[in-house]
Length: 487
Image (cartoon, rainbow, N blue to C red; front, top):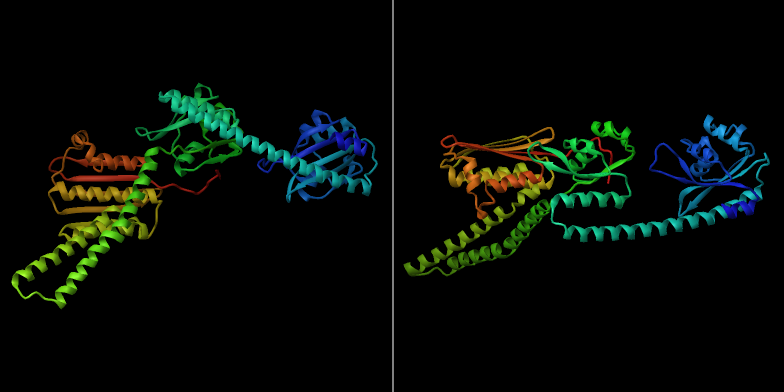
C-alpha cells in the first residue's frame, strides 16, 4: 500500500481478501492506510453491489467510481455510507488480485476529490495489482510451508511426549491441550465411548469450563457424534446455525466453527489386518495346496483308468490313495471357506450366511433362515463382523448344543442390522462361560463380543441349561444423509 500511495499520489488504500469459507462475507479488509478502523469494520460486503472491492473480486475486472456515495451501481449499507461520509473520500478504484487463475482479493485506492481515475492510471494500477497478487501468492505459499513445518514438528513433539506418559488421564489431557495448540483454536475435548450408557462421554478437555463434564453425546449427534458414526472427520463452519448443533453446547458457549475427528482404536485396525491376513492365506491355500491336491487326485484317477492294478491288494491301496486325495481336496476347500469365504466378498452378507446354513443342512441339520437384506451391501467391516458372529454361533451350536435344529435370521430395520442365531440345544450359563474363557477361546463369546463392540454394536447371549441358546448381534449402519461438511 505504501508503494501504491506514492505511485498514484493518494493517501488512502486498502487490501481486501476473498474468504470462500465465510458464507456471510464476500471479502474482508486485512490492511488499510488512511482509513478509519470504523470503516474497515463495516467493509464486509455480502454482495458485490455493496462495494467496489467486492465487485472487483467477484467480477474479476477493474471497478471505479468518481462518487461512490451517489453511484447507482452500488447499494451501500447505511453503516458503510456513514463511515465513508465520516472519512470524507469520494473517488474509488478497485482492482482484482488475480494469481494462478484464482481471485485472491482486491486492491483499492481512494481519493477525497470527485476526480475520476484516468484510463492510463487504471492500466498502470492493473499492472501494479498483478505484481502485488504474485507477491501475495508467494507470501501465502511461504506461510503455508512454515505452517506445515510447524504442524509436523508439533506432531513429532506430541508423539515423543505420548510415549513418555503412561497415565491414561494425564495422556488424554495432554493430547487435548496439544490438539488445541496445533490447530490454533480456543478449546477442545476428547470423547470416549461408554459401552454401558452407549454414549460419548468427555474424558479430557482444554479451554472449556466445567460444564463440559456433564455433556453426553449420542451417536450421530453434534460433530463428535456424527464423526463417531461416520468414522470420518466432520466440520461445521457456522456451528450456531448448523442444524446438528448440540443444545448443551449452545447453552454454555457460542462457538463460531467446530470440527471433530474419530478416534479409531488399534483393535479395529488389528481386526481389519486380521481379516486381510485371512484373505491372503485363503488365496495362498487355494492357489497352492488346493491346486496340488486337486492335481494329485486327477493324476491318480487317470492312473487308475489307464493302469488298473491286477491284484486285489493293489486295487485297494490305489482306492485308498484316491480317497485320501479326495479328502485332502475337500479339507483344503473347507479351510479356504473358513478363512475367508469368497461369497462374502463377491455377494455380501446375506449370501455368505446362506452358504453356512446350507452347509449345515447338507450335514442333516434342520436350519431355518430368514433375511431381508437380499443383495444389499453393507460396509465391509460390518459384513465381516456379523458373518463371523453367525459363523461362530453356528459352530458353537454344532459342537456343544447337542441338537440338529437351529434358526438364523438377518434383518435390517432403519439404521440397524441384526443377526440372530437360535438353537434348541442343551443351553448353558453365559456368565460362567465368559469367566472360564481362556486365551485359546477368544473366538467364542468374548471374541464375538469384542468384534461387535469394535463396530459400535452390541452382542446379547441369552441361554440357560435345558432351554437352548440365542445369540443376537445388533450393529448400527452409518448414515450419510443430511451431512454437513466432511473432512
